[in-house]
Length: 303
Image 1 (cartoon, helix red, strand yellow):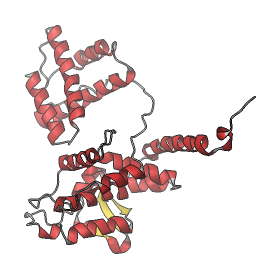
Image 2 (cartoon, rainbow, N blue to C red):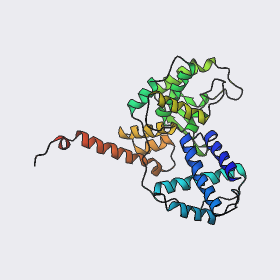
Image 3 (tube, one colour):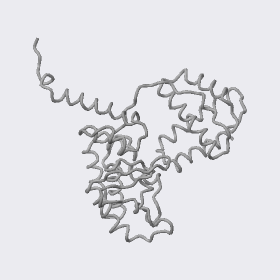
Image 4 (cartoon, helix red, strand yellow):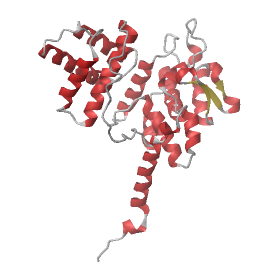
């Protein structure tokens, strides 16, 4: 029962949420730890009714051998699993609500340099229709800082290029207007007016901007695949996702003097504290600039 549910959970993470294979495997192994614990102590509570006390004792025992970050990931996996149980398997309560993750230091988001982004774009094979589409996708992710869900939901009726804006449907079905500069507009228009026009578009998908070869709206999982493939093209060692371009968008704006509140509005963050993670990135960037360019750091002190 438990292992069948764990398999279903991993398929859900892979197909519905579009998570990377590494993340899916890691979360699956964390649930396997719980299964091993239940077997060790002959606990027969099924996944849809297991009690919070059992989970709390499991976390307590396993966490003795884990650092704070690994503990946090374990608890995150458990929370994700039981949200899956509620949405997909009919569980009625959320047993992880009283189990808190340990406090850990702020993990700065991974970002790409402009040089890396340009190299990725240059690696795309433009002899294919999908190549032009993929280039427009990467440009839109980086040029507008969109979430992957926002990108796949983008419609032709959301493009207001004469006003240099696009309309984005964000979290909680909240709309926002995001500025879009001319170069990104050009890449999207090139795809729309050429490669997209050649597709036989499926009924109900006519208004979506980015389509697969069958004329249907692209899925989140397909965007993840496109991004990973482009990263592999240049032998990029970083583990990246579509969200990495969103992080890079915000970080590069901040490094070049953009106002934090403006970045918040473009990203669609309800709370400014969510955007403030990029201040940590900027401080790191400023520190590197000081070390690299301040004359005191270039001097060889002899006394």
